[in-house]
Length: 496
Image 1 (cartoon, one colour):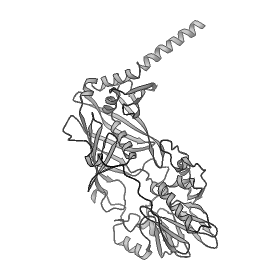
Image 2 (cartoon, helix red, strand yellow; image 1 turned 90 degrees about the vertical axis):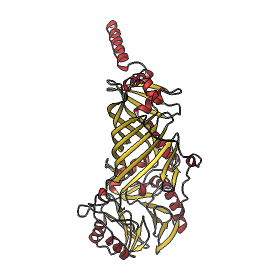
Image 3 (cartoon, rainbow, N blue to C red; image 1 turned 120 degrees about the horizontal axis):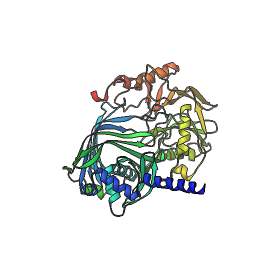
Image 4 (spheres, rainbow, N blue to C red; image 1 turned 120 degrees about the vertical axis):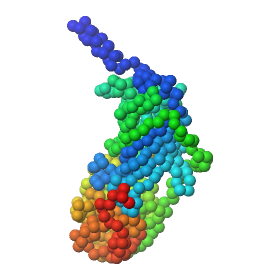
């Protein structure tokens, strides 16, 4: 019996050794051979990727449970890579794939990364981008099979932790520059099929960036993928279908401009908060970016909207100065989009109860418990539990001093803005507080019919509009502006 167990153990061990191939370094060597050979890989000077695809506009879905987010069509895409020096420049001609507020939705983006210096091309010249942008662009640069193998074969690189998952062999790579990436290889072909890196998102916290590679083709002795798809957690971030891979073509100088290299990192803008009393016990907290509103009740204050962490902390601090004897206890969050709920975790850290549509509840719970270890935000430093009040079709906050009615935006004529959007109405003043239904600065109003239909359905008479985006106006001016501009949902972004 013992002999049989020993024989079985040795058989399993031998099969495992065969299945695992050699070592982590051996898997890299096999992949280099499959891609065209180590000498050929190391001889490459530059690489150009050209094609089309889609690019994510992160944080914008109809409902928070949706996997498909708003995105841009990449009508033309070019990525130039200086392989030896770790530089990349990207040019995109893109069009929004959803109706939005601009009369023209086709635009060109140009940006780059040189080592750990990121920059954007703008009308007034190149400008340095933040460390967070640089971190994500460096991941984009590295997440290509040729770059991965170049980095893995370079002096100072370390590959380890060989393991198997189905038909994949997986290793952890730490580059000489201390980039950390997990790479998966197809056991049959030896080619890289997936790269995974950890990074940080201010709303989602610690996230994975995973790029898949497939549809390889032979180009001047190298095997290169024609399809690349990057996911940010569950969301498809970048999906590229290449029409051409060019090795060692003319790419020009991909180094960061001297003005960028010499420039300091951009600093966060100051969160100046202006105060405008739009009616008794109602204040409009303005300033750069998105706005918030404060309602005064008998014994407490309630805030409407917390766009980002920095903005949320600033408006919360300002709100507490308006009536020092009354605590700020609640925040109404109109919907789940990141430019409106980005300050959720900050609000929770300040002890505010969150009021939002019921279909945001599970998403907000997930946001609050997500890990923020790569960068610690205010809630990671000051953890508190989430207290939340769900709103269904309507909800009323009322005492002797104030009445605020909250309504869910309903779908109208086959068209709606966000599935979880709520707005506030103060009957005493016939005052409307809304987000993303109207902004006087928009070039068109794809949701004009939804906006007006919902007010009529609720039998609301509005005299004054207090928007999160834009300026306070009479409602008569709101209607006049919408009537003067295009409002069709069916306009194609490619026909503008």
